[in-house]
Amino acid sequence: MKKLTAVVVVALLSLLTAFAFLPAPDRGPGAIEDMLKVFFKALDSGDRAGAQACINPKDGHFPVLVYDLDLENKPVTLEGAEANAKYLDSTFDSLQKSKAKVVSTLAKIHADCHSPELGYATLEFSQAVTIGAKTESSSYRATALVSYDKQDHKWRIFHWHASLAQSPVTK
Image 1: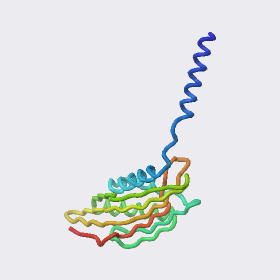
Image 2 (image 1 turned 120 degrees about the vertical axis):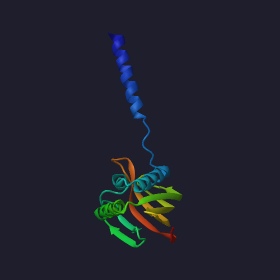
Image 3 (image 1 turned 90 degrees about the vertical axis):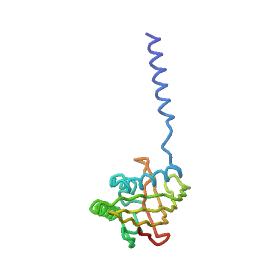
Image 4 (image 1 turned 90 degrees about the horizontal axis):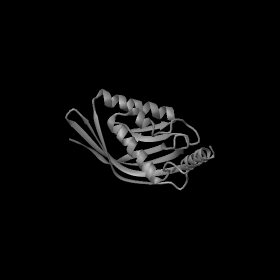
C-alpha cells in the first residue's frame, strides 16, 4: 500500500510540475505579426467573426480609434469599439452583396513591443478586390497599435491608421 501511495504521489507531483512549466502564449512581436496575418486572412475569406476577434471588443483603457479607407478608398474615421464593429459588418455585407473577392498581400511588416501590454506594427500591404471581371488593386501603409488581452491571451488592435501608398490600379 505504501508503494502504491508513493507512486500516486510521484505521479501527481510530476503532473503538477509539468503543468506549472507550460510555456505562456507568445506575447512578443511575432505574436503581433501573427494576429495581423490572421486578421487579413479573415478579411479575405469573409470571416467576420475572425476579423472582429482581432479588434479590441470594448472601449476600456485603450479606446478603439480607426482611420481607414473604405472599399472606394474614401477616408473613414471611427471612434469606439461599437462603431468599428458596425463598420466591419457593413464592409463584409458590401463585399458579400457584390460577390467581391478580396486578396490581401502583406509586403512588409515590422512589429515590436516594449511592454507586455502594448505593442505596435507598421505594415505595407496590397489588396486586390475583384467584382465580376473588374479588379482594382490598391497599396497601403498602415500602423496598428495593439494591446494584450490577458483573459484571451491575444493581441488586439485598438488603433488603426491606413493610407494609400499609391493610386489604385483598375484592370
